[in-house]
Image (cartoon, rainbow, N blue to C red):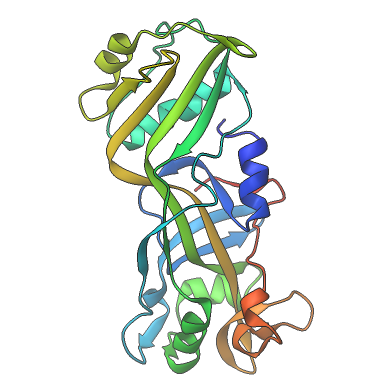
Length: 261
């Protein structure tokens, strides 16, 4: 279990983001995602599909400020759900929360996104790259997800952070006690854990790596015999040929926007 469908999930979905159920490293713009028989898989980088690239890959813009997401908070999650998410975050930072739950008497946990950054590529540049490159027709990814029964998508933007803040509560607006030294001892030295100077039940967890917790993507398909980023389900057209390509919404892969890889 991970993020439930809560305020933050709904908010990110409204901005066109799929939500990574357990935030982690290794999800980047220009990565391919396959969906088949209800399963979603992280397949690898775009250049796996191209045998004769038309030039360098589209440039990835790095570390743009995630102003719309900065400071956004989840709903107040049941402790069993929240501690599962926290354990995944600490594990991705290189620590280990394990089965330790005696560090707090909290019944609710709320996550706040801090220090949010975004990496991105321009969808139209990706479309031009696909159009002008020679595709590996024998590639199993292409056969299964584009020419077969599945669907193929390309990530164009991610949101990431190396700091997550957690509010621990006994009940609504009633602060819980949190033993930070106990968490630090269990989690290990790779994770910096610190209580807010004014509110001891508000704890930040910071690592030395940035974890992706959301991404935008567009579908990859064949239009007029060319591999393209496509817009629309019925009568798909290449994104570059859409009437207003900059307004074409990215794809939400699941109705609840929550993705496990």
